[in-house]
Length: 270
Image (cartoon, rainbow, N blue to C red; front, side):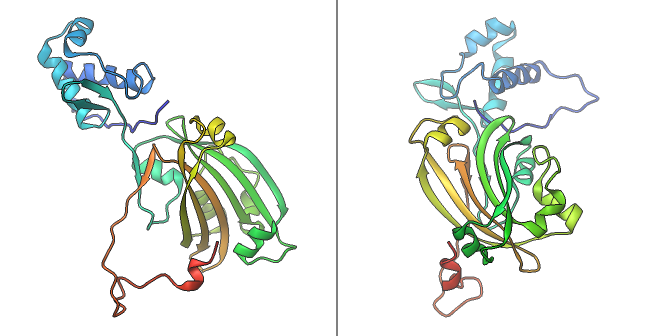
């Protein structure tokens, strides 16, 4: 099933709700509930007129809203099909999943797959610049938007930062918000690398995709605003639900502050 953004009502509360808007809401709820499958042909205006016993003009106004909001798409000579909006994320801005979903009016949630305190694995200790004896918190969470699986998060946190919130509810709360509230930890910057991968068996089961489906793997090394490393993550995104959009600037060989190349040491973090 799909994750759909929620639309705020555009009808004034002190005014009667127009018929077309009532039809729009009914159709929207049916789409969200999966009664009309993605990429399938949507009922024609004639069918909807008979179903709701309203005028063709009323149906067309309702359909117009669904088209404008990105829930439907019209293909000339073929008809109207159910579609969805992709969630856009700017890779140049460090933002937590919870905040990202809120920006798109989508309800975020999580399911804990694994949570443990362990000695830092060699590759994680190397990336986070920790000693081999260091303890870390390893968490694997499945992240949902409107109850649809979107991301598998595999995160490693420094023990001293995470210890105060380890026993808290990490399924309905933002880790970053809990860290700030209980430890005053603020996000700083991050190094990240984005790769294309194919879904294996675990991704198929958790993300509800077919084997071999193209996915995005994003590795991040995150610092606090005090420049302390506190998290390394390997997150797998459904590329059919979330995409990354960025604006680029020309590369200036003269060293413009707006187009400085990534430092060599930063390129070799992972």
